[in-house]
Image 1 (cartoon, helix red, strand yellow):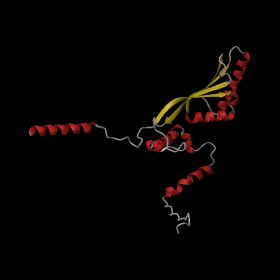
Image 2 (cartoon, helix red, strand yellow):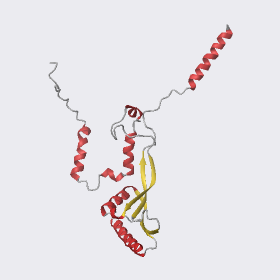
Image 3 (cartoon, one colour):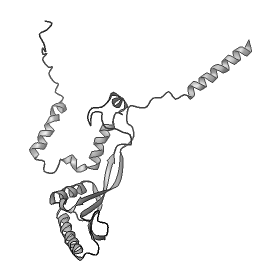
Image 4 (cartoon, rainbow, N blue to C red):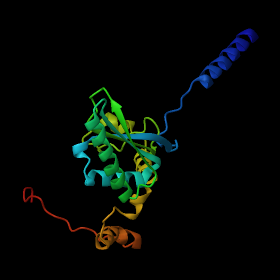
Length: 216
């Protein structure tokens, strides 16, 4: 009798240990990982005919926002061609003066002779750029890129979209003071959108409407 009780006790203890060893936790629905800041090499390959003043202004603006270090321009030309070498020298002076006028001070412009004609009419621009991103697997808010399936909604981790927006602020801090050329009136108009909410004014209830006379 005692043996049976002892065996039953051991069995109960073993069952408890087995249950205790099981992982019954569920994945958190809140994103707790940190935003990742990293440095990357931004490389832009553009045809000479498309490297207009407007395009150079856009590149310079991005460099001022998030770039660092030296901006490098590489101008290829066909080797063993005196005419091509001479034209590359003219292009070098032109692009250097253009980017200097856009307040790019740390600039290195070089010409290089090439026998591969793949990029012979291109200008290759590169610079180090700071970037911020959400952790791997942290998706955008469902519906951000269009219609989604129900499964996508269930897989979304709360906080990922907020982290994505904060990442943009970190990577492009100058955006926080408005885009270049934004008029003061436009900025004020955008700011007034949230003022009723800041004041704590409670919205008045909406009047009921009647969609149909059917049914009385």
